Structures are given as C-alpha cells and as structure tokens.
Image (tube, rainbow, N blue to C red):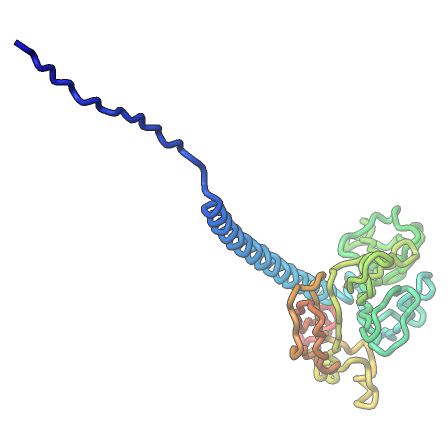
Length: 340
C-alpha cells in the first residue's frame, strides 16, 4: 500500500524589521523653532512692556515725591522766617543787608540806633547774582531767609558765628545782645539768675542751580547757601527743580495779612509796598523735571502757569515735568501785627 505523503507547503517566513523611533524631520524642526521663536518674542514683548511701564511709574513717582519735598522744605523755612526768640521789635528800623555778608558788623544789627535785618527778602530773576550763590540758573530768583536757630547754643560754645541773646530779666542793662564773643552773653532769664538762651543767627539763600554735582552733571537742582562759621556753605537739596518763581504778599494796612502779591517791592504802588518788612506771605511756583528723559515721550503742547512770571514754553525734550504751588504765611512777623 502506497502511502501518499502530503508535503506541507513551505511557508515563507518573512522577518519583520521593527521601525526605529526616529527624530524630527527637518520640516518638523523648523516648525518647532518658529513656534518657539513666536512664544519667546511674545514673552520678550510682555517683559519689555512691563519693564517700561515700571520705569515710567518709578520716574513719575520720583518726580511727584521730589516736587512735594521741595515745596514742603521751602514752606517750612518760610513759616519760621523772622523767628528771633522773644525779641521785641518796637521802634526798630528794618534793614536789608547784603545777603552774602559774613562779618558781624554787616549783618544788619545795631542797638543805637535800633536796627535789625528783615525776615525775608529776595532777588528777582533779572537781578545780578550775589557772590555767595554759585551756578545760579538764569531766569530764576533767589529767596533770602533770616532767623535764629530753634535749638539754643551753650554760651561758652558761641564762637565765630553771630548769636542772639534776649533778656527776660528787668534788671539787665540791655534788652538783647548780638555778638560772636562768649563773654558778651551775660543776660538772664525770668528768674534773673539763669543765663538766657543763646541762639545762632541764620542766613539762608535758596536758589536753583544748573547742576547737582557741578562739573559732573547738568541736573537742575534746588540748593541752599548757609552762613556757617563766617562763610557760606552750599548744600544741594532737591534734584530736578528746573524753575522756582516767587511772589511776595505785602501787607499795606498793618493787619498781618497780605493785600497784594508782587515779585519785588514796588513803592510806586504805595510806601508800604516798597518795604520788605511788610511781606507777610510768600507764594511758590516750583517746576520740576525728571532726572532722565523718557524714551518716546514728546510733549509739544504742555506749558505751565508760573503766576506773574507768565507761562513756560513747551519743552518737547523727553523729560516729564510737574508744577507745585503753595501760599505760605510768615507766622512770626504776621503774628506780631495781629490785633489781640
């Protein structure tokens, strides 16, 4: 019996080669890079805008802060102008001495005849610059304030500078003394035993300079020249003060309140308007600018009202500006004229 062997057909076995996990194709890479660049560009724009806004906000905040500080500083000084302790000025002849005087004989004080310097005076924007005011900006005035220090000085320490001592004892031979010699301060207090307070005479000139650190920058700055140790010492106070205009309130009827504001005494309006001793208030116009220009900021229309000095012209130079104004009363001379 013949067996038929059925041969199983040979199954061709094909080997499957697994596909390798390949990288990006060139097109995919370019698309990814384009998307990434767009995202980074958006982030950069947001960051730049945020930084610019923060810088602008900081610039504006600093400008406002400097403006308030400058106005407060000037206002505080004017409020205490004419403070000469318990001094009585009955029968005085007021003087307006050279604000740059450094010697005792030229400060405006005398007992026979009785003379004393005015509490407040000024130089107009067009007046010549005193010798003790360096780097004054053209077209800006100068404010001169006189008073004594609020804190007393021990009589033995009163040297070089001039000091005022006022007597409160009826038995003293004189009502007051101005000197720079400690041995001269012998006046007494109410008990006629204690030595009366001795206070340093102060002369301060406020003005706008063309620079803060002169020779290094050109930042307009409010400065003060102080009489210290028989010489004037200049101190920068507020950066960015570009303009300072002043008006003085003159009291014509002796009631302690201003009747008219002028930029300087003018006797043609009446005798009372020609004397610095009749100034009972001061009006300030303080114009500040930012210390650095703001990119892209242009202003072709904005001008500022400086009172009797008129309006400013648009600067259009990239700097932001702010104007602060205030009227301040001279408490000491005005208070002496008020009716009890």
